[in-house]
Length: 515
Image (cartoon, rainbow, N blue to C red; front, side, top):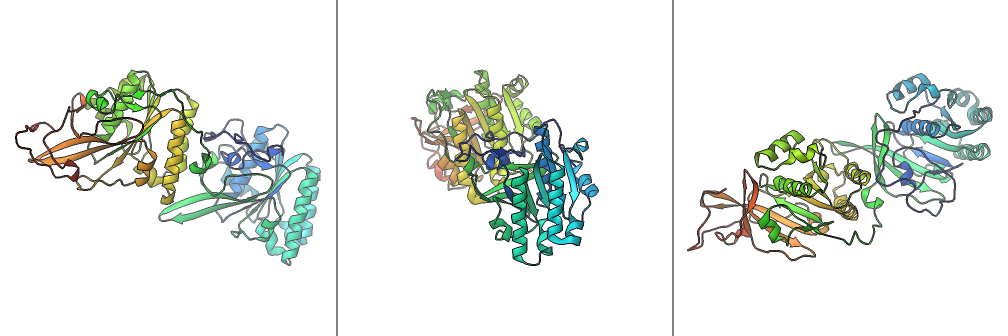
């Protein structure tokens, strides 16, 4: 039986092309799976004629992985044939019914290109030797089989009289693979890495499905891969209508970044004259900047101003947000005179909105990086509205510093000038970044704060950090009006503003009545 179709699954792209990295085993023929990003994790795919164990609990995706691999193989090669052997009680009809919703499923490939056979009866009636005879016969009859999948290896272990007999069975399978010139996958629900067949096979892949807090998380780990290098550690897994999609950890994908980005750097202005003067005409291209501020202070409007100013100069901009849907965002910009609609319509600015659901951290990074790679252009601008969205998507919070470092480095390599906003408390005498790791990976930090003064609330802006550039260290008041954001030439009405305690200075005029 076969699964497959001629068109690519929708999530087929990967943040780095499969086989892009050099591998010491590059000369060994590879079997590419076509499963999004699995070949990248294996640095080119499985080694041909090898025997691989795929283990994991029920529901982790073993059967989908095995079938998707078969369908993708026959789709990629007109001569490829696959044999899928089940040792489970579940009938083929029920399995295919469950798989029929996958985009790659194609009944036209069954049984000529993908052949399904049950080995349960042979195993039950004749034991391990009977199953080996059945496999040998099937591979002989279906010459040219490229992939053999045995689903339900735990049934063999349960029928084996002892551990030695089971190990001999696995050894026989390896011999059959070599003689038949096919690559074999042994699917098992056993969750123990020390399982006896794992010492014999050429590679071990573990799929997990676990609850972490309230979230259900699927992950893939390569524990062993003889003859080749691979990306170690856990990688996120999603099962969608397009099948299994794997998201390699961002920090291990880009563990060896280029030494530097483009040397031809320029200033990227905000189009706000007084603020641009504070930062020597703009941010250096290819840099990352954190916008820190309380809710409603104007972080989003400042970020949109940055994108629109770039669009006026012909520079492409991307808004990546989590909390404000595009219609609300456009309406918000329209009310303060920021012409976002025009540049969205002409395609200079793109809005990517992620509704506040359960996202996967590496999937979010891939979405942005793949978009940027797909449309390579110099001097692009990116505004990530809410680093909290990435934090909420992280299952393991201790990953965030390494993730942000790798992610921002890639944006620099792509000549993207990035703004990232982060929420602070409304009124606080202390300035503390909720994500200290963000301050370590950005070149610039801009602080926006409220201050209470004579029953009035004022907005203040200051530059807290700016690498590789001079900047104005003074604190300025800023206003949001019908013409967008206006930054004052100076703010002389408050003292000790960073402590949140403001008072009038004798002889100085305050800006009462202005908000």
